[in-house]
Amino acid sequence: MPVTVIAPNARAFLLQLTIILTWILLYEAADILAYSPHASLWYPPAALSFAALTLFGWRALPAIFIACVLISLRHIELYHPADSVPYLQALYPSLAHSLSYLCGALGLRTLVIRQHLRYTGIVVSFLILAAVAALAAALSGVWSLQWAGLLSDSERSAIWLGWWLGDLVAILSLTPLLFLLLDKLNGAQSVVRIGRLVPAIPGKWRDYAFKLSLALIAICCSMLLAQQIRQLEITFLIFFLILPAMWLVYTESVWRSFSGLALISLAIVVLMRVLQVTDYAAVYQFTIAMISASMLYGSAVPLLHATNQQLKQSLTIDPLTGILSRQAFIEQAELVMGRAGRRNTKLCLTVLDLDHFKRVNDVLGHQVGDQVLQQVCRKLQTQLRQQDLLGRFGGDELMLLLPETNAVEAALLCERLRQSIEKLQIKVIDQQVTASFGICEQQPNESFNQLFARADKTLLQAKQRGRNRIEIIAADDFATL
Image 1 (tube, helix red, strand yellow):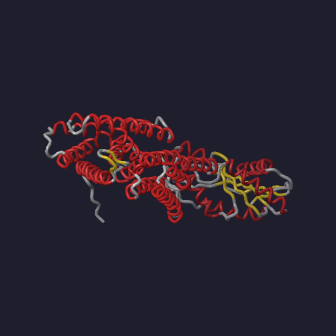
Image 2: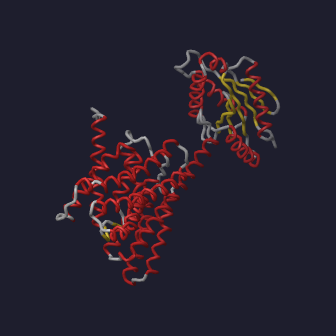
Image 3: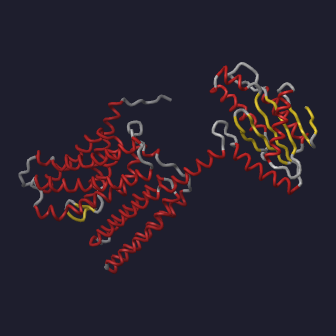
């Protein structure tokens, strides 16, 4: 199937066009939801500006500026058709918006690229820089409108706070999702890969829908009560939204969490307009900001859990071979040995290593030696039973615990393993790979260290007797297979 390759110039043009069109669509949505001139409970274009400028830096600035200019010119034609407003002065609001968010976004972008901060530090930086950038955009925006003759002094003083809060609420609630969407769609062009900072957590969509439904039900109930009773105290019931919101973010992937955050904020904005509870706009803006900040902080919990799981796995699994690490093998072996002692069942420990493996490392290099060891371990894993344990003691020395197995049965199993190693065809070397085995049967009240010491001594016996062989010790007597 032929693959279409988009030229870099075409890709850059598509990125600019996508940002412009999306910015204008989001502006139209904000205009519908505006509760006073130049101020909306929720101003999505600010979120897109901050996200695009953070991910793409200066490359996103032309698209943001052009979108702002187009909207400014349209605004003049719609609301000030009879006024003589120079178009050059009408560009001031576009510059104010673009440059304010560019400064904040470049600050966050620098912190992420240079990896000065961990995820929680990035969240704190995002909250601070978003607030500062939104404040700068609001103040410079109202001043630019006044300089352009589109606002009076009294209007400027009246709307700057609502402007700031509208921008800030949108950035906090929508920018996280926009980060992920832009990162997913244009990852090849973005230097900042936000999606890689957080892990993906699998889960059932039904569970996610249930948690999100609880959040939406809490919003509907609290806002309906506020509409009916019309008392400020009743509006604070919406703060109980924090319970399903945090449940969602603690247990779902970052994609679902940030999608849920966007839907929660959208529901609040739409219901405020539909139910005509605009008198409580400040309460709902504070609610969205609080929920957004809490969910952003809360998204670090799944990250911490995933990090702990990775750390646990790194301590349990040997990173080179994929078998049990030394400590994990010993811990599990001690449990199995204790159970075998209580049940009075047989158990054998086998220690094996590859013959002349040091020569492979010295002559062909450690990378080749690593490949040989990996292939041997994969082969052994396919030959073992479900209850058997395979671990790496160190270097090329491996440990094999065989529960419910006596010395003779262990010898037969290890002989099959020896033959399978001997028959391995490894492309990176042109010589046969062989292994020596030392098998010991567990004695009553014997600890792992004691059993391992005997098995290791038995392995040494096998190497001294010519290698590529198996030595067994049972009831303190040596036997050779």
